[in-house]
Image 1: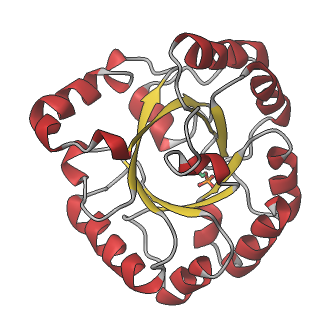
Image 2: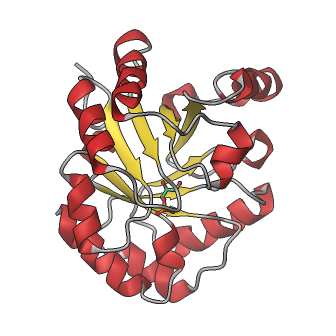
Length: 236
Ligand code: 1GP
């Protein structure tokens, strides 16, 4: 049995995902630090660079020093030092093997000897919003029915033993029935849900099925303080 310390994400109910390519003020970072969220992910799909990731990380070290900081890697050249862990997406329903294993193998070929594998978490992604940049980039088959999604989830869980399964609806609120069916199917994988959570009600609807909620876009909206307070309240 693995310890919760070695696998801290198992205890996370609420995660904030910050996009290094987008602007966010110091007040918001301080509010996130004090919100009761469990961790911060740094990651995004477009315009991610080493420089903008490192700049945001530096601000977070100053303003949110007590929260776990993880980088979700979308570009090997943007990997930074000084995070608690690295989340590596493997897009299960990608249109090309590059996003399942090809890009990973290339990154390892280039940086393999520097990788601290004890800090690496593999996330089996199902990309489910056709409008999202990540769906376009990975040419994902986003048309999965709940049963099909659950079958992908079972394969990721039972065949590939992926520790985390991530239902990615980035930019839109997903189908709670699909999330419920995936949750029923997964036995060991920890279930992350991300997409369109901007209220107490939406957070409750998905927290019923998913182990961890990821909040992204809504933190860049005008009512970010309310979003933060209400979504944390929903899961705690
Ligand atoms: C994005 O899953 C996260 O990668 C969160 O989605 O930005 O829609 O909240 P939103």
